[in-house]
Length: 316
Image 1: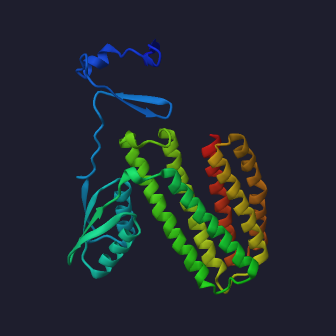
Image 2: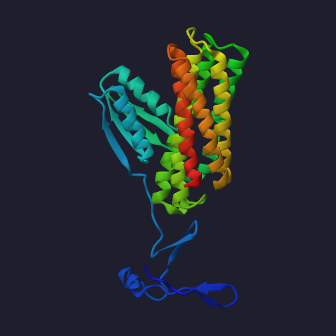
Image 3: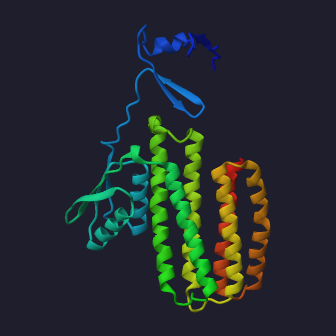
């Protein structure tokens, strides 16, 4: 690392000299253009404007002998890694329907051609239209409604056989998945094309990436919880309701510290996690012979653990 002194030049400008080896290596001369990119507290200098083109990033996926979960993982991985076009090979109508369902759950990815054994999907996303902070807040807003709807249903006692609640929560979980995949994809893109970094530095974007994963996991647990509390075999509603309220409060406090970047408050909320977790563990022991209650309580325990990990994004 070299250290250079900042020199004042005129009334409004400052200059800094550039290392000669870098000038020679990049074949620069007097009058050459240097591109300057601000990224958080850093300035990135380059001898030419970065050109990022993923238009030709295509891939062929052969699913003629692949199970559904493998197909889903590969398509999502290609989406997150910014493949612009996917040529997908398959052998059955069932596989074709499954592939189309996977594609429909990925934002801006559309089927442009389908034959008897091939589907071609193309991405139409414009990365310059994305605000990663807005996407994160959308995920947070959806999770808040998932919490509140489950709690209100438990308060009213209208939960047994309530398939509408389970279906609605599952639909919102699908929305969370779409947003999470989009955030992961966008972060990978901006790490290649720094010109799009308008909402922080590399650390901030990696933090958004982790946040999306945490929120997606919380939504999964809420989806599973809604599925169990609506079953006829479920009971012990009061214990579960009170723990949902405590867990929701912990989540809301954690997200508040995240938005405010309040490290000291994050320490306090992390401490508040302990009594909530202890109540969950005590309830697990209390209802050890009730399978359905045990499952919901385990989901509560996992949510508390995920919120604890989320808080580390603030104080670490």
